[in-house]
Image 1 (cartoon, chains in turn brown, red):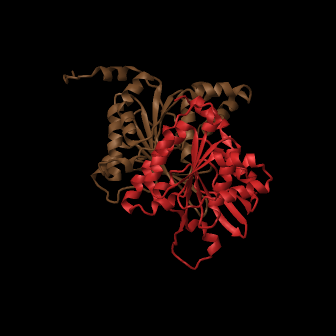
Image 2 (spheres, chains in turn red, blue):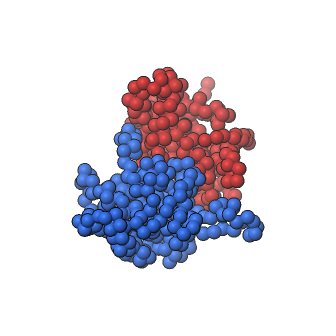
Image 3 (cartoon, chains in turn blue, purple):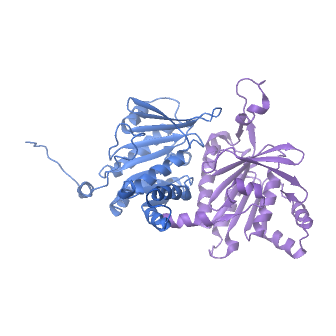
Length: 244
Length: 250
């Protein structure tokens, strides 16, 4: 018999009891090692390598209801960079619905589905911290949210007054997200700037590699226009070629 | 925020630039809640393009704030265009009164202007409350900023800009210069590799801030090539040729 005493807070109980929808089947090509409901995913890419298109695709897959081959998961989008384009997402969702219905009366249906995406616009560093620290309340309020996207996590790196190194800042942000969401079964996806990272590989780098489940890097070869997607998960690596 | 509202706004809010080819390139025209950037070397026609866009925006009932950092703004140029189109004095007066020029010389002034702009009451419905802000040019303002302070200032400016465009339904156009980066062999075939060797100024951080970046290159005499350069939202590398003449841009 297990004699260890388990003490749970009320929040933890609720978090455990609210059944979050599963995101396991999000994308089997990208997440080749299976996706658990508590994973953290990192995406970075050069400009015009299709990061925003990838995000739209993933969001569309999430918010589409089960009967349309989607997951029926609500998505929380923390918009710090103002790069997200709703019409892009609309088109992706619409074409998915059209595959099932034909192009009749789809617009209202699609609009209803867009309701499954919650967007928080964020304008500065302190506001960002405030949002991250109230994630638990948001998740309690919206019980369908199973996927959180932060685009991008390092948008306010230059506004912080602590002068942390880039990697350390990243870890700090991730930890505060993790702290607030650990009781909820949600996947966290964040994007970061492509050409920034700390020069020295420190302990933080090791820590980072422990928390992050998938690292996706999109690059575009300027000369051949070839698009390459590198995926790292622990020690496993995979490379995909794709087209836009 | 409600995603459906955002979608509706995105779809409807387009203002044409007045240059047909450029509108095609931008899929309709300038969109609200976006930050644009026009890049080009000196005398490639960046300011000319800005003049034209601001003139055209006033015709579309927008209020234009032209933030002039290098004393580039020329009312006579606007008058010249309008007169060649045989516009009456009333129209010229109307256009002129809807372009508000701020002449500034430091980056702090820029923040002050945005601060004042956002303090102005915004009643929403009135068309004239829609704003177009042109910063000509951001790179001039940043020349006096120390290197280690550049990124924090740009980051703050990005925050202010994003807040401004979202709350006041505005468009911001920044003008930026380019710098040429020589990679490896200097004697390689120049024309072929020229584009890969150009970079917008203001450093790597700024690269990802504007939503859409346009590159303008002088081809010959009056011909200019405008292309979409480093945009997250539109297909890259699409280009068009425009003609800058006395009576405007076609």
